[in-house]
Image (cartoon, rainbow, N blue to C red; front, side, top):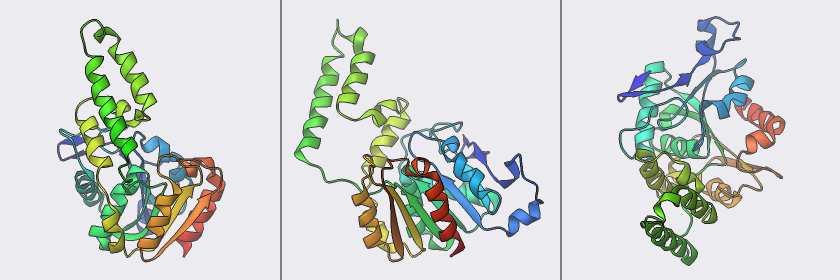
Length: 265
Protein backbone atom coordinates (compact mmCIF):
# COMPACT_ATOMS: atom_id res chain seq x y z
CA UNK A 1 0.00 0.00 0.00
CA UNK A 2 1.33 3.45 -0.95
CA UNK A 3 0.70 6.18 1.62
CA UNK A 4 2.35 9.60 1.65
CA UNK A 5 4.62 8.29 -1.10
CA UNK A 6 5.81 5.38 1.06
CA UNK A 7 5.38 1.67 0.55
CA UNK A 8 3.71 0.37 3.73
CA UNK A 9 3.56 -3.28 4.75
CA UNK A 10 0.43 -4.32 6.63
CA UNK A 11 -1.89 -7.20 7.41
CA UNK A 12 -5.65 -7.19 7.82
CA UNK A 13 -8.40 -9.80 8.39
CA UNK A 14 -8.50 -10.73 4.71
CA UNK A 15 -4.76 -11.46 4.83
CA UNK A 16 -5.19 -14.11 7.52
CA UNK A 17 -4.38 -17.37 5.68
CA UNK A 18 -6.37 -19.61 8.03
CA UNK A 19 -9.58 -17.61 8.07
CA UNK A 20 -12.79 -19.56 7.51
CA UNK A 21 -15.33 -16.75 7.67
CA UNK A 22 -16.76 -14.53 4.96
CA UNK A 23 -15.56 -10.92 4.52
CA UNK A 24 -18.94 -9.55 5.59
CA UNK A 25 -18.61 -11.42 8.88
CA UNK A 26 -15.31 -9.68 9.52
CA UNK A 27 -16.99 -6.32 8.91
CA UNK A 28 -19.40 -7.05 11.78
CA UNK A 29 -16.59 -7.77 14.23
CA UNK A 30 -14.98 -5.19 16.46
CA UNK A 31 -11.81 -3.84 14.89
CA UNK A 32 -8.54 -4.07 16.82
CA UNK A 33 -5.43 -2.28 15.55
CA UNK A 34 -2.00 -3.48 16.74
CA UNK A 35 0.86 -0.95 16.79
CA UNK A 36 4.36 -2.30 17.38
CA UNK A 37 7.26 -0.81 19.32
CA UNK A 38 10.49 0.84 18.23
CA UNK A 39 12.80 -1.51 16.32
CA UNK A 40 10.04 -4.12 16.00
CA UNK A 41 7.52 -4.97 13.26
CA UNK A 42 4.30 -6.81 12.49
CA UNK A 43 6.11 -10.02 13.42
CA UNK A 44 6.46 -8.97 17.05
CA UNK A 45 2.67 -8.53 17.24
CA UNK A 46 1.85 -11.76 15.42
CA UNK A 47 1.03 -13.81 18.57
CA UNK A 48 -1.59 -11.20 19.55
CA UNK A 49 -2.89 -11.10 15.97
CA UNK A 50 -3.39 -14.86 15.91
CA UNK A 51 -5.03 -14.89 19.33
CA UNK A 52 -7.58 -12.19 18.47
CA UNK A 53 -8.21 -13.08 14.81
CA UNK A 54 -10.94 -15.70 15.50
CA UNK A 55 -13.13 -13.14 17.31
CA UNK A 56 -12.08 -9.72 16.03
CA UNK A 57 -11.15 -7.92 12.83
CA UNK A 58 -7.44 -7.42 13.53
CA UNK A 59 -5.17 -5.02 11.65
CA UNK A 60 -1.44 -4.39 11.96
CA UNK A 61 1.18 -2.46 10.00
CA UNK A 62 4.91 -1.91 9.86
CA UNK A 63 5.53 1.73 10.74
CA UNK A 64 7.75 3.56 8.21
CA UNK A 65 11.36 2.65 8.89
CA UNK A 66 10.53 -0.76 10.38
CA UNK A 67 9.83 -4.23 9.06
CA UNK A 68 9.07 -4.24 5.36
CA UNK A 69 7.95 -0.59 5.19
CA UNK A 70 10.12 2.10 3.62
CA UNK A 71 11.91 4.75 5.66
CA UNK A 72 10.31 8.18 5.95
CA UNK A 73 11.91 10.75 3.64
CA UNK A 74 13.06 12.85 6.62
CA UNK A 75 13.14 12.71 10.39
CA UNK A 76 9.58 12.19 11.65
CA UNK A 77 7.92 12.96 14.96
CA UNK A 78 5.00 11.14 16.58
CA UNK A 79 2.54 13.45 14.77
CA UNK A 80 3.88 12.34 11.38
CA UNK A 81 3.34 8.68 12.29
CA UNK A 82 -0.15 9.56 13.49
CA UNK A 83 -1.03 11.22 10.17
CA UNK A 84 0.14 8.15 8.27
CA UNK A 85 -1.87 5.91 10.61
CA UNK A 86 -5.02 7.96 9.95
CA UNK A 87 -4.46 7.75 6.18
CA UNK A 88 -3.98 3.98 6.48
CA UNK A 89 -7.19 3.58 8.49
CA UNK A 90 -9.07 5.63 5.91
CA UNK A 91 -7.74 3.43 3.11
CA UNK A 92 -8.93 0.33 5.00
CA UNK A 93 -12.27 2.01 5.88
CA UNK A 94 -11.73 1.50 9.62
CA UNK A 95 -13.53 4.41 11.26
CA UNK A 96 -13.34 3.31 14.90
CA UNK A 97 -11.39 0.61 16.69
CA UNK A 98 -9.67 -0.60 19.80
CA UNK A 99 -5.98 0.32 19.63
CA UNK A 100 -3.28 -1.79 21.25
CA UNK A 101 0.10 -0.06 21.27
CA UNK A 102 3.35 -1.46 22.60
CA UNK A 103 6.18 0.91 23.56
CA UNK A 104 6.55 3.33 20.60
CA UNK A 105 3.17 2.14 19.31
CA UNK A 106 1.79 3.39 22.62
CA UNK A 107 3.10 6.88 21.82
CA UNK A 108 1.11 6.97 18.60
CA UNK A 109 -1.94 5.48 20.35
CA UNK A 110 -1.83 8.14 23.08
CA UNK A 111 -1.75 10.98 20.57
CA UNK A 112 -4.54 9.38 18.54
CA UNK A 113 -6.80 8.88 21.57
CA UNK A 114 -6.20 12.46 22.77
CA UNK A 115 -6.65 14.24 19.44
CA UNK A 116 -9.18 11.98 17.69
CA UNK A 117 -11.34 10.49 20.48
CA UNK A 118 -14.08 9.53 18.03
CA UNK A 119 -11.70 7.02 16.41
CA UNK A 120 -10.87 5.13 19.64
CA UNK A 121 -13.35 2.74 21.25
CA UNK A 122 -10.86 1.34 23.75
CA UNK A 123 -7.17 1.85 24.40
CA UNK A 124 -4.64 -0.79 25.46
CA UNK A 125 -1.16 0.48 26.28
CA UNK A 126 1.52 -2.17 26.80
CA UNK A 127 4.81 -1.00 28.37
CA UNK A 128 4.04 2.25 26.61
CA UNK A 129 6.49 5.04 25.95
CA UNK A 130 5.39 8.67 26.11
CA UNK A 131 6.56 9.94 29.51
CA UNK A 132 9.80 11.86 29.09
CA UNK A 133 12.10 11.19 32.06
CA UNK A 134 13.58 14.08 33.99
CA UNK A 135 16.96 15.17 32.64
CA UNK A 136 19.49 14.49 35.39
CA UNK A 137 23.13 15.56 35.65
CA UNK A 138 24.03 12.00 34.66
CA UNK A 139 22.04 12.37 31.42
CA UNK A 140 23.92 15.53 30.42
CA UNK A 141 27.27 13.98 31.34
CA UNK A 142 26.50 10.97 29.14
CA UNK A 143 25.43 13.22 26.27
CA UNK A 144 28.54 15.38 26.40
CA UNK A 145 30.77 12.33 26.83
CA UNK A 146 29.23 10.68 23.76
CA UNK A 147 29.67 13.78 21.59
CA UNK A 148 33.28 14.28 22.67
CA UNK A 149 34.21 10.61 22.23
CA UNK A 150 32.55 10.49 18.81
CA UNK A 151 34.90 13.26 17.65
CA UNK A 152 37.91 11.39 19.01
CA UNK A 153 37.17 8.10 17.26
CA UNK A 154 36.77 10.01 13.97
CA UNK A 155 40.41 11.15 14.10
CA UNK A 156 42.87 9.84 11.48
CA UNK A 157 44.51 6.62 12.59
CA UNK A 158 41.52 5.66 14.73
CA UNK A 159 38.83 6.04 12.09
CA UNK A 160 39.17 2.48 10.76
CA UNK A 161 38.05 1.12 14.14
CA UNK A 162 35.19 3.60 14.34
CA UNK A 163 32.27 1.14 13.84
CA UNK A 164 33.46 -1.22 16.58
CA UNK A 165 34.34 1.60 18.97
CA UNK A 166 31.04 3.40 18.37
CA UNK A 167 29.10 0.18 19.03
CA UNK A 168 30.93 -0.33 22.32
CA UNK A 169 30.39 3.31 23.26
CA UNK A 170 26.65 3.10 22.68
CA UNK A 171 26.45 -0.09 24.73
CA UNK A 172 28.42 1.54 27.54
CA UNK A 173 26.02 4.50 27.54
CA UNK A 174 22.94 2.29 27.24
CA UNK A 175 22.00 3.99 23.95
CA UNK A 176 21.78 0.98 21.66
CA UNK A 177 18.31 1.89 20.33
CA UNK A 178 19.81 5.02 18.83
CA UNK A 179 22.77 3.08 17.46
CA UNK A 180 20.54 0.44 15.92
CA UNK A 181 18.48 3.04 14.07
CA UNK A 182 19.40 3.18 10.39
CA UNK A 183 21.69 6.19 9.75
CA UNK A 184 19.84 9.12 8.22
CA UNK A 185 16.13 9.79 8.78
CA UNK A 186 15.67 7.06 11.41
CA UNK A 187 18.35 8.36 13.76
CA UNK A 188 16.83 11.83 13.46
CA UNK A 189 13.40 10.28 14.01
CA UNK A 190 14.61 8.53 17.16
CA UNK A 191 15.90 11.81 18.59
CA UNK A 192 12.64 13.63 17.82
CA UNK A 193 10.48 10.84 19.21
CA UNK A 194 12.27 10.29 22.53
CA UNK A 195 12.25 14.03 23.22
CA UNK A 196 8.48 14.37 22.82
CA UNK A 197 6.71 14.39 26.18
CA UNK A 198 3.14 13.18 25.70
CA UNK A 199 2.16 13.51 29.35
CA UNK A 200 0.11 16.70 28.71
CA UNK A 201 -2.12 14.67 26.37
CA UNK A 202 -3.08 12.03 28.94
CA UNK A 203 -5.87 14.07 30.55
CA UNK A 204 -7.51 14.45 27.13
CA UNK A 205 -7.99 10.69 26.72
CA UNK A 206 -11.60 9.67 27.35
CA UNK A 207 -11.61 6.10 26.02
CA UNK A 208 -11.61 3.23 28.56
CA UNK A 209 -7.92 2.39 28.89
CA UNK A 210 -6.09 -0.74 30.00
CA UNK A 211 -2.43 -0.33 30.97
CA UNK A 212 -0.29 -3.49 30.97
CA UNK A 213 3.26 -3.46 32.32
CA UNK A 214 6.16 -5.72 33.17
CA UNK A 215 7.39 -5.24 36.73
CA UNK A 216 11.00 -5.47 35.52
CA UNK A 217 10.64 -3.19 32.49
CA UNK A 218 13.88 -1.20 32.27
CA UNK A 219 12.96 0.78 29.13
CA UNK A 220 9.62 2.21 30.22
CA UNK A 221 9.42 1.63 33.98
CA UNK A 222 6.24 0.82 35.89
CA UNK A 223 6.35 4.34 37.32
CA UNK A 224 5.37 5.56 33.83
CA UNK A 225 2.34 3.27 33.90
CA UNK A 226 1.34 4.64 37.30
CA UNK A 227 1.50 8.21 35.98
CA UNK A 228 -0.71 7.22 33.04
CA UNK A 229 -3.18 5.50 35.37
CA UNK A 230 -3.46 8.66 37.46
CA UNK A 231 -3.87 11.06 34.55
CA UNK A 232 -6.11 9.11 32.15
CA UNK A 233 -9.64 9.50 33.47
CA UNK A 234 -10.80 5.91 32.89
CA UNK A 235 -7.71 3.71 33.24
CA UNK A 236 -6.61 0.60 35.09
CA UNK A 237 -3.07 -0.73 35.48
CA UNK A 238 -2.12 -4.43 35.52
CA UNK A 239 1.48 -5.34 36.34
CA UNK A 240 2.92 -8.72 35.31
CA UNK A 241 5.45 -9.80 37.92
CA UNK A 242 8.85 -10.78 36.57
CA UNK A 243 8.10 -9.54 33.05
CA UNK A 244 10.24 -7.08 31.12
CA UNK A 245 9.62 -4.55 28.36
CA UNK A 246 7.91 -7.19 26.20
CA UNK A 247 5.55 -8.16 29.01
CA UNK A 248 2.93 -9.48 26.58
CA UNK A 249 5.40 -12.13 25.39
CA UNK A 250 6.88 -12.84 28.82
CA UNK A 251 3.41 -13.54 30.30
CA UNK A 252 1.37 -14.33 27.19
CA UNK A 253 -1.37 -16.53 28.77
CA UNK A 254 -2.03 -13.96 31.50
CA UNK A 255 -1.88 -11.16 28.94
CA UNK A 256 -4.50 -12.88 26.76
CA UNK A 257 -6.81 -13.45 29.72
CA UNK A 258 -6.65 -9.78 30.74
CA UNK A 259 -7.23 -8.30 27.29
CA UNK A 260 -10.08 -10.77 26.61
CA UNK A 261 -11.84 -9.60 29.75
CA UNK A 262 -11.28 -5.96 28.80
CA UNK A 263 -12.55 -6.43 25.24
CA UNK A 264 -15.72 -8.10 26.55
CA UNK A 265 -16.43 -5.25 28.96
